[in-house]
Length: 419
Image (tube, rainbow, N blue to C red; front, side, top):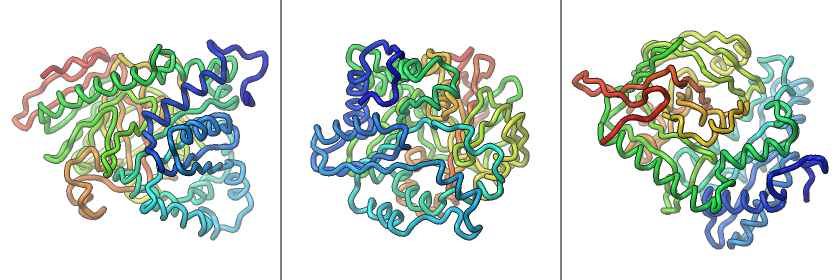
């Protein structure tokens, strides 16, 4: 079973045991699989070990059927290089039909993250690469996932290519880091996660009790004020789908987040960590953006700027913000001292914002609105969601009440807000 770990690699515990703990956490806490439920796992071929372990665990807890969909990025590269222009980004009808069926079958959706080929798309025509993004699939998945009609989670699964890009010695060392980030190093990872979720929920409750009108980030290269709406609601840890099943959308997660009013963002930010723009296959470093009247009006980057601009130009409403999140120094991901080049992990190193889709769970009552009505109420709707880390010990976050009074939320990368 140990396809990804070479014989010379040394994990802190046997690989099969680690995979069993990993799979149990993903299945029992991440998506909380229910008896008789279908499970759909999305992965790349290099993640087969993790996918198989998760599938086996899903059957153990009573899943009726488990489907693993493998997506090979080399096929996307070949399409960008050679496919007819009009076929770029066009998904086969049988795949679209399967996704549309999820609205009725309500499977648990598990996506394995961790790009094994992060430089694969470098040098390709950015316009053709942008057009190759399967927007038709995203348009089918987004309404199901962003409204939590199903239980879903995104979770990292190390590969050799990902380990190489991170700069660790081997895939075993990356698995050890992921184990820390996911609390698999605890005596009872499931109990540890439930305790962690409760801490994040308590933090979100404190923020909601204050009822801030605005949130402001200030630090080197950053001075951004984001307006909240009367509907905005801070969320942390876990959420429930419309059947009342509790699940954790991101594993790991260290954030409390809210959906801001996309029309009320002003200022500028500089990223404090690099990030991988997965849809464009590009690493972005030193990104600076300017925002006026809720719209990103300027973007510059030391690396990856062309990819960022191409996405802004291609995807409607990607120039508006959909998320504001707070992460402080009490982060298991940050304790690993790695830059993962994978936003699932890197967004949990520090506080961040995201352009694109705003989640209904972060704005009360928005689940009952149409996408057009959500936009009218201030919740951005888009076919992308890109998190960028702007937090650091030098960046302080303040909450601003409607009367203009200011309250410290973080100082020195510590959450200091009390109730």
